[in-house]
Length: 451
Image (cartoon, rainbow, N blue to C red; front, side):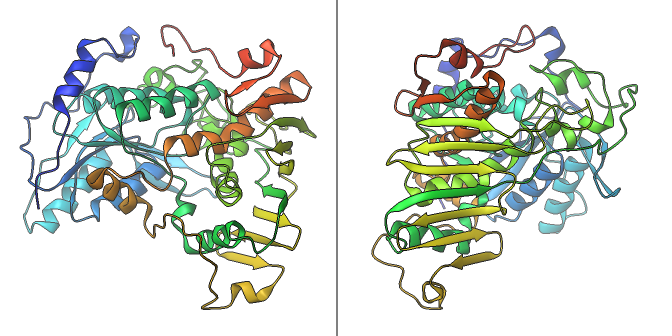
């Protein structure tokens, strides 16, 4: 197998031209231990993973299982953390644990007593700058995605990033254009696109079985009603650089109730269950409706309710009423059944994880030919990314697709804040005749961070 090609000269040129993030003095490079350059292994795709909570660990282990992948480096600002969750259980995650898992895997795989080849880094910029890494996995909280993606792209890396793609609308506009400009391979962690029942649902809709599409219903879970962990303001745990963890976000007092896993409840870091899930079910809705490069033309937020605690400021119940091109009614709401439903003039299709339903049961029978339209299919989301890195063919969930699928969520937040309907042009990606709304589509960063 030939050695994977890298773009080192391009990386160095972009560094020279100054495409670097303006960072605070607190972001000084730091490592667990100084380690020498590790020679490239011919034929391997070398991966670095940023963010080592539950999702980052899952992705790291998925990449470890790919025979032509070598996890070369891991990065997190928390050396060891114990993440409590809503069920009172926990699992050790963090930088030191990740390094140990990777090295134990390769020691066992190579039948060695020990393996010491995994770099453990505190600063994501150290990881992105390495010429011995081909692709970067971003599994950090939402407020970090933009900065880490752009840093990776500036160094010529391909990127796998968890959904939602970005914390703000403007970030998404910049990222998907930069991916094209850099000719990078990009995969978003909207893994439902690599699942058979979602693929069949999309094929049925796109092949016209329900007739002309009239309405789409996207059911998302309600938000955080009460605190989900300890709300006491506490000293920062040893081994956690909390200033780095906040990064561009406001430096809120440390508490378990909005730190690991639970950060989504506060707008400083995430967008609640709207933004956590819209990149799944609305993504599938877009795919089925042929809207991967489009978006809503009208958006109106109604019926939003607040949490019972001021620890979280994302909505509990919510509805986002949209109109899409072709005069398609489009409802995204917590009151709907979780999943995606397309309603046409001749019937309907509903899909969720593990479920596929239709107004005509014959469409779901084994062996039913869904029609002539074919779509890019993937049975393994991580594998689809690695294949894209090798072939330079687009993945099943590229950056623009991910940005477009969450646009209605960004617009919903602005509509709710302003209390009015927004008229949006998906071609130029701007709210028409509404300077205030367009201003709100971006969020300011804690100085000196910036777009």
